[in-house]
Length: 538
Image: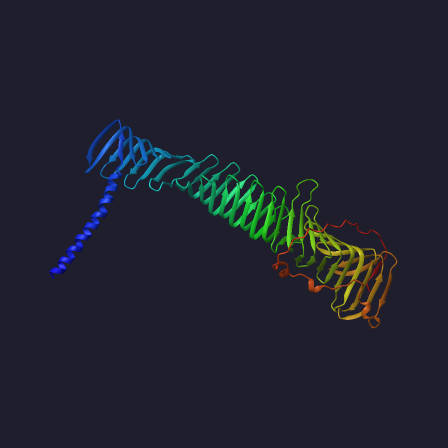
């Protein structure tokens, strides 16, 4: 039992030595961190409510380590190592950070200063104005919560709350953040700003508005010196001509160059055309934009949405009197609309003249009809098809209820539309036609065959109604029992229903390919104006 008591006594003695040894350095440190009076015009001391208070008046100066406090008057609480300063209060730390205000408190133990009233904080990089400021002299960080304005040689920043790290020169802003530069104004809810690099970091909805265009993003950086932006999450660039957006967005204001990745959308604001893809590029001064990575264009045509896809979609705005606003699609073009589908190697859309050029063996389908030519031009009026020009080896075929193929071919053709429906087709040169006569859409009664250089086909409800032969035709009617299979096809006929794009085909992902230059458009041709006798279809 005595041995046990002796053992406990030794343990408690050792613990006491350890605790006492730990307290001695802490006490020594606290004693070495006393706020020291450097000078004052007068001193009045006394004890109030059990604590010693010294009131110093006139040119008061205190010092602690690398910090010096100046004021007109100060209450010093020696027992607490605490100061209350009044009138023209200034705090200087290491001759780099300076603060001034109407009054302040300073805790010498925690080295925390609170400045109140018309506070101005300066360092070699910036000036901060705020109604009140908390400053940690150990961490060298300042915090304001009643609104502040920061001014440096290039920018002015405002926010409701903020923190400034004087070592890293980094501001952290929160709530109603605004940045004003020579070229841009920025609005955000959360932002950081480095006064050394002049880079703005933002997290959350951010708007950047400038003379050359606006930018929006929910995360990213903006260099106020180089005017280079790197954005993420729902970012977009908005100019007078375009809106370019994507999950990732790079924009160089000086070069006027933008680059977007993932879920890219490019919208032409003048004619409400939208292109979506995975990669987009934009050249502001050239008025050019390119989208690739399975791009799809959307626009309104005949009060319905037209979808167009290709390996690359390239848009060019008019940048002069003689320059047209153009859209180029190449290669492997596919289009889809409820009543119109098509394919071509390349396409150019003159948005100034509202002409769409299908190049290199294009094929169009409309309901049961197939239209083929070396080149097809579609003339739009008020976003509705007005005319269709088919140049060289023009061929129109349609499938009837008995799987027969009505066919018309010629050198060139011009189709006229009314309210989106085909009304008339002029065949100009080398005209030939085959049409099958049906009774009740179920019994074949024969086939009309005609050869005539020029023809006029008139339609009603998108079905052929009459054929007019404008020169002396070579026409015949062949009954079914005299109709061999070899006579059922005109030379050059090729029914390509398996190539007819669906909406799913237009939106299908594409394998990366090297882009080709768009084909040159064919010269415009005038429709035929000759008149002749009408011959009704049998």
